[in-house]
Length: 75
Image (cartoon, rainbow, N blue to C red; front, top):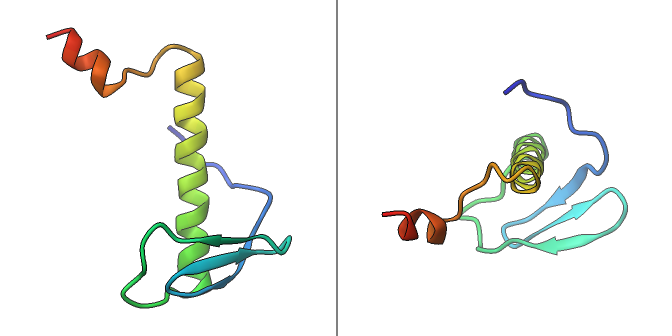
């Protein structure tokens, strides 16, 4: 799969417990970070996460996605 640039929201603030997007939305992190990441590091993680989620959604729509339950029932 070729990497693509993610357009849209950019993280403008990150702490150990939350991050803020350039549209003002603030989201909690699912777990507290041991140390705060730089904006550059967090934006890279955020962009890669969006690509991963978009890929999983596309695969599930194309029926190319097998869940853990489906794998178990096939054995």
